[in-house]
Length: 238
Image: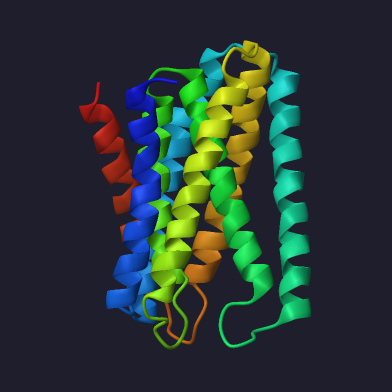
């Protein structure tokens, strides 16, 4: 692992901490949070379409491996959804965020970090692009962890823990996948694509549409703006 790779892996960790600081200073309304979630969803979708899927194709792995890995990734994330929902139901809300929800958040962040590490193992621009794209999602996560009453600076400590988690997972992903065959790497990236699609459809967008306030067409435009912003960054780097 090079020094530059480690510094790039630090970006999501720092952004996660910054999200916690922002959440301690600003308690966004439901509408503002929904717009942030739509923008983050657009960024993650762009990361999949613009960088991750083309990188998977460049590995020239057998189609059945890619399809199987994607299917396993989908079932894995679905299974984790069922487990975390059961944990939340058992613990309930006890003076703040439930244990189940926090466990789900830390698991998702660890997955994000491992995906970033897989991107760096693949080489090229995949790692840096995924690091930047998922950093936007982690910024939203810090704001999403706020409750109906601001949690003060405790949220900063929690976000710092998320930052450490994503960094350690990224380093682990890079070290574990460096030197593996192209087939294994492509399968891991296909698994990652399923995990990211789950993140968009089952977390970001579902959370964005919760609440009593009716969504406006502008929310959809913000999603496209997030996609376009990420695509422009990727085009500028060529």
